[in-house]
Image (cartoon, rainbow, N blue to C red):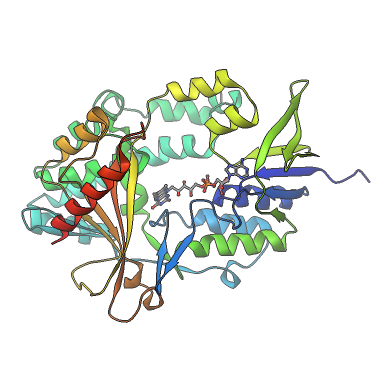
Length: 403
Ligand SMILES: Cc1cc2nc3c(=O)[nH]c(=O)nc-3n(C[C@H](O)[C@H](O)[C@H](O)COP(=O)(O)OP(=O)(O)OC[C@H]3O[C@@H](n4cnc5c(N)ncnc54)[C@H](O)[C@@H]3O)c2cc1C
């Protein structure tokens, strides 16, 4: 009998824990090293004065990815984690007073855009049908296969995917595409917003991004019982059950790399060897700090940077029946907002505001008759702007808009 192979994961974000479980199921002895004193990375809970907030991600889609991890681990998910689909994916508010419920049911959603914006029923259903085709033909290929592996590119699914690409998806912008599909500026803005999901500008990004609404509007939006952090709690518990060992307060300093092979890591000034090392931390910092490969790091930085976000966590001593779990308040001038973020590198004074309110689903997240507002606006990539000033201005602008 050979000795058990070992794996080290650097970082305990959701992806790090998922990788740890997968490797453990494959028979590896797995250790996770995490610089924080808790698991979850960007997914964590903020608690203050009886208010609870999901700190990072708030929109839960594609729960089958979590289901899959429990399935391969041979554990019953219902003993760890539960979630349900929500009937309204998001509620959109416009400055002209229009409010749109983006129902998860396609026909109800099409009906809503018809009643409120006079869009043809078929405009919405056809748009979402194309979005689905695009996602199934192309999106899933690029999301589920490693692009740096040659065998991905020589597989016949790639040829099938490439053949299904219409030129409009590559050579026209998302905004151009949406304007061709819808009559009202409200519907165009609603579908333009999906570009922001990967930090893009809809006036520059290709129409290919029209595949994103498929995930939300066709496949559905879900809510995990107890909030997003319950995804981490469930996966962490599963990882422990599978024998994964977690080391917190452990900042990995270096990946040991010699003879063209990764051999282990240095953490707390101690070398630990492993057959496999997975870095779950930012790819730029992995090259720069852990591998001291400045050329690769620089190459990554050469890529255009995505937009960022500014978030406020506000305890609100009131309840608003007109709001949903996910809400968007659009700016008066979407194009101008993106000009500010991507060209001028600053915030716009009338920002589009996303408000996530988990107390709509969980009474225990606030004191009685209150709401917990996770308030997020798009922001430029960080180039050392004066964030203290920008933050105060944004706060005042958001409050004015909400009022
Ligand atoms: C504001 C915001 C909103 C978002 N909203 C959504 C949403 O609504 N829906 C959605 O699906 N996604 C959303 N996302 C994206 C989602 O949060 C991320 O894709 C996901 O959480 C990333 O997980 P990860 O495991 O890849 O990385 P991370 O969560 O970043 O984990 C990396 C881990 O590595 C650790 N680490 C770093 N360096 C070291 C080191 N040297 N040694 C040891 N440990 C180290 C970090 O502490 C961290 O725990 C959002 C992201 C942000 C920031």
